[in-house]
Image (cartoon, rainbow, N blue to C red):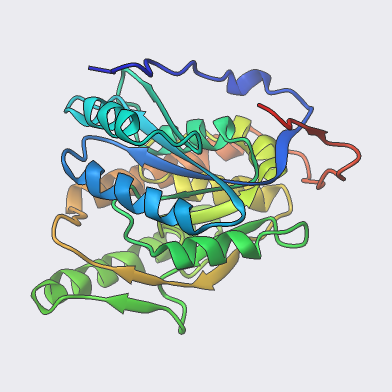
Length: 285
């Protein structure tokens, strides 16, 4: 079912090299993927259309998080129909959770800027480009913020009830996040974040949450390393099939508690951006 690309090898997060490998002018975009079915076709074509318009260098990584549907077969067919070496398909056989897929993809990226977003492309590519463009040595971590006063939410009338419930859940989760982790962001859970390759390599070995609470794990690791993420306005679409159940909320609260317990037992050194001279640039990874 995995077609011709097979399984990707897991990187040993406990033994990351201190040397930084990245291609300076490339941006890596990770799409964590779990059983999207036929919707993956739409995403693939949207990615291809986006890449066709870019003069700068991008790579897109689909990370198959133990998919059990026909996603792997579909991607294999799509790749054979129109091969683009800027699109990479990685995967592993066991479902580990979105947090694991994101961590895996970010550490497998080759770009100096590493980003991730949802595979259903709820965030426009214009926002993906803008969030990535905001990342630099002075603000190495930039995140989308749906609660930003300049953000625009596109909500069909039939989903207004869901949107209000989601807003209430977000407020409750934000309060719990502040109490349990000390993070004071307006929106920790938006599915669009970008950071430098150096920051990925600095904090990835310290992150352990594989479920939906992984964002807070990364943000707290960054905070303890001396990095505050920059929140940026975005435009996001709510569509059919977008769901966040009360059970998911309970799981996320449990993960917040797990993050709090874990960071009481571990520490992370201060983040210092590497100079171009100090970094080892992988010009052809």
